[in-house]
Length: 401
Image (cartoon, rainbow, N blue to C red; front, top):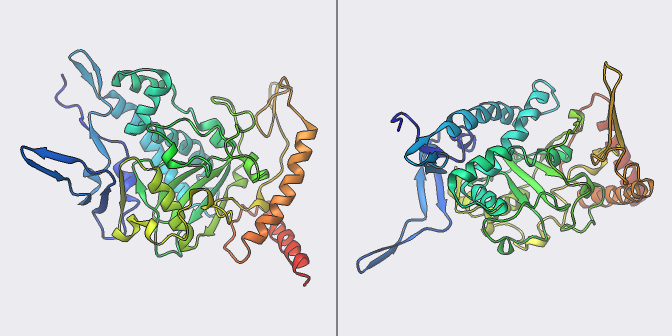
């Protein structure tokens, strides 16, 4: 065995953890949600739940990524696979976290953030156990091989979603760090019903993806189908749910700049904590307990004011994407990735229904979000200003002013 190989494997990288430390801080308030009970002879005690540790001691497990075959072991998965993914992901997280409409580095950042998120979703102990269950393997080394083969399983549907980067700059409370940084939320899938290690979930129309990018920024991805029809049944399969297919993404459509109110940050933190497996961390101890101050703990009502939705007036109603290449060939799909051979391709009746539900959703969203901070999109085509004007004209008409 190579004595130089690594054995301490962080399933939440240290560079990512440091993004959740306030200036001057080197340690977290690190909370064990399920501290072990130790029995020693006639003595029985529970381990301390709240610890004060730095990134080196948080969110790791010995030999989590060590490949084993008999007496042979290797840390190639840790060094080569995660080493590359983390290097690219680190730069991408920095770009997205600070995004404010400047396209510098955005395209490369988008290309790298999605595979990083996929690796992060699968690399945790829970993620690996989930893969074991889904493919029916028991051996840990086999689960690592499966993870590598299924790499980028989530990327197609993430790329097709509506992206918004929300901020907690005006909130005294900042975003939590958990052992499941890429978190799914569906108001009809209660945490108590999501038996460990859980299911895929992303193929359901009501499933949102939350990925905190640091103390003050969080990426929220919403399925386009839900953005067009918020009344869709959350547990239904989204249109053309699939994996490993080509997707074109317009960087102009990424929303940014919305400042969350503190209760909205608390609700996100409550979701993050409830979907965590065992450990959460924060720069301030108070942030570890969002349930103490959040306005509601009713899972199905956490988004009743639609605060997790992007700005529905700035979600374009695209219908088809056609790309021509220099060799004369072409590629085309509709907004849900369906090709010309799909019987639902260019389904005008379906599109008409979505157009009507989208108009109703925009109006209802405007009323629910009245007076709240609004997201923006790039002003390259002045769509940002046009959407704001149309929404304001609608609200003025409704109020009779």
